[in-house]
Length: 440
Image (cartoon, rainbow, N blue to C red; front, side, top):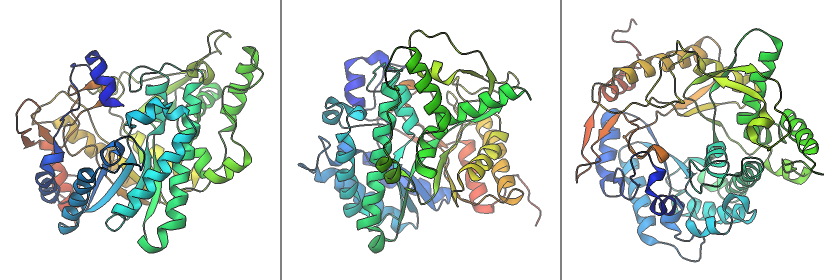
């Protein structure tokens, strides 16, 4: 659906460019595996493109060229002693399924289950760590509540909640298929990937504390609660039902999870996959007057950044490394997941090889993650930075760079070049030391 979204209107990316070729890892996968080997990493997280192996999203037609690509990549990773962590869905739905209603259509969960089963069958020999859906919140809020991402539907009052329910059911279906049919023979594990900033109360007032907790429940608990506790967060159920009633509806805009659905979703995790980039301050504001319904009005607070935090090249990412430690502590206390795996963490700039701001970012965030492990006793099972390469960053196109390795997207060969942050990361992997000189 992203191909259609961008080809229909090139202005949907900041630079007017699309992802037809991007980093061209389709042809340069061997070179990229060698970059991973040189980095010294033991794990590589990547996603399968649903439409690459199933062009219309259904198992009626399997694209063997796509299957061969992923098989070859997985074999090459194995040959270099690099473990894959494979995501099944990272925001890009096959166009045919999008036209069937996408993540507003309950049947898409069934299609996702068939796609997941096929992937486990084809690639499970090489994969021990799976992720089902990456950042469902982003798909729902940016693609179904906003025209920022594909499919560009502005259904911010209700479509976002339907999207969430269907993605949760899709995740649960894939988890149960793996658990029932493949776990015994393949010995892997599977979870979904959730993202959140740390939400810090703007003051010590009870109102700001409540507003900050509501912020994280509406954005993070929205998906974590059904999987790790059961059902939507209570604050979401109460606020959305109340505002729906005041708007004249005889039902809540938040679709109910039946007891059967609650039971089906609850417990579908083997570890907690967490994407964390930044933090935000949250303050209380009076509830908006009943008018045009929206997710923002349902949430009813104000989130903003501290002006003292260094800003990246994008307006959502700020350097506040304490957010890492506080969020993993929150996850551990709230959801008791057993193990947390940091699946994304990184910094955006506009380019350049000597990227010292990114080096500073990794030093700060990894230091706080280490404090969480050593001082707070949090079980962190692994960490993968976002990202290996400067890639296509959705609506930002190629204007935002997050890679450890630079990619010249204007060159025919998509030439790779090491950045300072890549060499720093390499040093950390080799020495397990976050500063230049470590004392034994």
